[in-house]
Image (cartoon, helix red, strand yellow):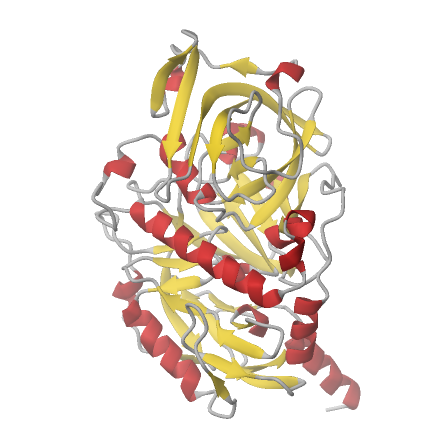
Amino acid sequence: MSLVAILVTILQLALCSIAIATNSFPDFQLLNVNETLTGTKMFMPLGLSETDDHRGKWSLKLVHRDKLLSPIDSSTLHNHGRRFHARMQRDVKRVASLLRRLPGKGTHDGDAAYQVNDFGSDVVSGMDQGSGEYFVRIGVGSPPRSQYMVIDSGSDIVWVQCQPCNQCYRQSDPVFDPANSASFSGVSCGSSVCDRIDNLGCNAGRYCRYEVMYGDGSYTKGTLALETLTFGRTVVKNVAIGCGHVNRGMFIGAAGLLGLGGGSMSLVGQLGGQTGGAFSYCLVSRGTDASGSLVFGRGTMPVGATWVPLLRNPRAPSFYYVGLSGLGVGGVRVPISEDVFRLTELGYGGVVMDTGTAVTRLPSSAYNPFRDAFITQTTNLPRASKVSIFDTCYNLSGFVSVRVPTVSFYFSGGPVLTLPARNFLIPVDNMGTFCFAFAPSGSGLSIIGNIQQEGIQISFDGANGFVGFGPNVC
């Protein structure tokens, strides 16, 4: 092999890329330690323009919440350790929130979360204690007022803070004032839209009221309305949104939530035939100055992606479930029963893809052998003490790059997704401590988190019931 070919091979392994195959994949990769640590130290705040229209697509730039830290929390901006621990605290709350919404999980309410409609219950998943991790910038009202919005693939709501704001948390932009919007129209109590939410009756005898209480004491209260939303140069009229006048929570910068879940009240559900139930996103990798993307419409469905069937759980219609049959380390399938990942007829178990959860969670019966297989193949790396929710960590200070085994998801039907090294071995401080970015779920539910999704184009074809991985990266 020529020197040029060797260098190209090394670069391909070191860069954030994906390998998708049906029967074969490399058994190791190189993790560029120096490059990854540099990304944690040279963090730049967000620029101003976050929309991008091109080739007629409904396209938005997608950024991680850390880019909104300045000037809201400048003390955390350049401290990766503090950002990491804050992210893990949010993540624990996020997972607890998801589990509370599933049959028989976690709370004395049992199945109560499923007795309300999509609108009422789904706010919890995306806004619980600032769990939103990725943001887009859209226009709300006429004329459009630019607002940062959390995206959440597990929620079915579009929701913003509104004036008059009797109690609001701090956000980056001025709070939206419906009095200055020519297109704002309150939803009447007799409307069929009002019937689809867990409403509290009428406000001033006319408009549909809602109130959502969060498990951690956060809440939002307000009225339901129809409003115009602007995505770059694309204008969408009569979108049902929650207009929150009394809100409490640690939502850091965002004005509200853009729900992308599978229910009828999500943005995707409301757009219906305009987009064919299709959208695609690419979550930019941590510590980079680049932006990811969120694009709507059937024209966004890529050629050459690996498609995996979506599964539907009637007990959790907002969530995107996929069929996972196993896990691999170093090109070897870990001996785990497929039943561990199966979604039962009663709605238990299964595997959810979630943009709001950072770290992939696995049932202990899957996580333990998976972690042990990774440890077995990394005996050449110096270990470090556990950090936060991670029990498998390494001291990579002083290393330029390290050789690590591949980590792969085996999907039902044969496709295999092999992750980039930086999607499963991540820095937790500025000093060179890296951890295996998986954790036990404490339940039968598996969640594929956004760290594992970073840098990979992910496309949802809701009309045909598939999710695609690749072929593009970001």
